[in-house]
Length: 241
Image (cartoon, rainbow, N blue to C red; front, side, top):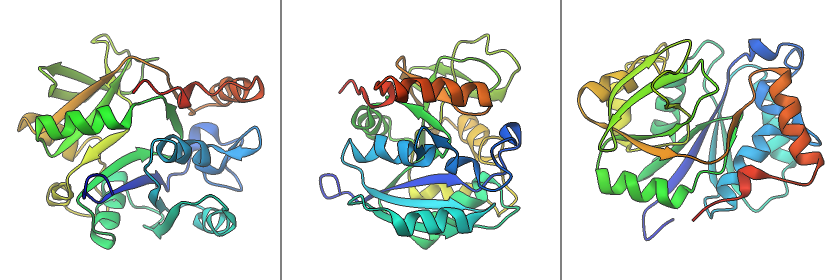
């Protein structure tokens, strides 16, 4: 709860993780260890450290591994796992979670990327802009959903191999429950269905994050994150409030 507003955090954790298949034969990608804890724990800790401790984990592939891990958690968090199907796309997973677990607003993120996003600032911008969804825009390595932004409103949401425009989809969304009206079923991919559609309607805002952001799509990126942890530095927890 924040000022009487009930906020839940949906973490998308159901995909196959094919680009890091060396690690995902026996477990879903969010359960890949960064030193001694799953990256999923590190993602959740970003939210928990900022006071948001009510989680919904949308599971699919190897969901039983996440279920067992959640049952062993000792952190003072509220954590619900929702098996959203093996073939369900990201939009479908979000729709199921929103419909199963009502709230006033939802944070939505991926279970495999870390960033020192100020969730309070993200939430403040979302409330100020009064759009259905706010996406956190980050500076690229490349290869992600490219954003074109004017006055904090996304004008175009698309895919490019090289992010020439300078901003990409970094995850860390805030969404109204109304997002379910733009997701027609389990087959809908959040990134290529509702987000571009909302952008054309002027209903997709962007919070521009200049700080740390690092996904874990490859073993090389896993090593990058492990080096931070082993050196005792956690740049994704160094939040600028």
